[in-house]
Length: 179
Image 1 (cartoon, rainbow, N blue to C red):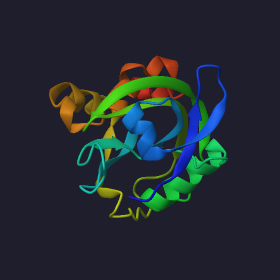
Image 2: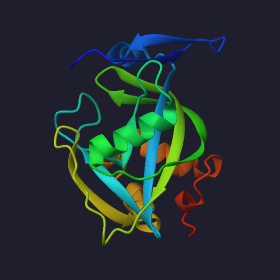
Image 3: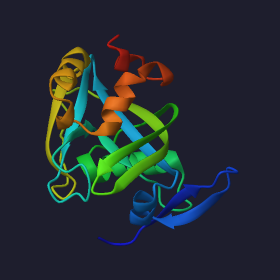
Image 4: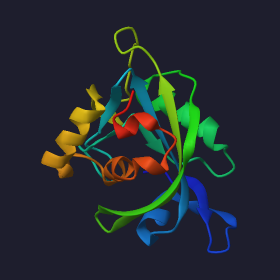
């Protein structure tokens, strides 16, 4: 895995560069982005590729990543949605949330995550996922997603479960199962 420098945040709120894998090994608080793509009441999910260094094979929202050191969060959200899913959509800020989650293998996500949403028509959109990032994708109604998570939580990434559990803290009303 190539070493990428992402943005860490110290206890005083100061930003500094850190390598991505190091941030996850140490559980260092860092900046992240997460994008939800909707089509009406459905949300686009991706299944993480088997080669991912954590949470491989689990279902997540359309795109999750970390801005490169010095990169604006909205630019990262747009770039990574295009790189991971082949979608060139406008993204809209939907709040900020902090969470910490064990993602296995001694790795921890300790994220200051900027949430984004995007909209498209599921029937007419051409999704071209990067196979190094995504092994499968699907559209699922939020109510059905909540039911699947309740029945098989380990099939979904810790962060997606957190986002849905704490959906009232986001600017994405549809995560609460409302149109």
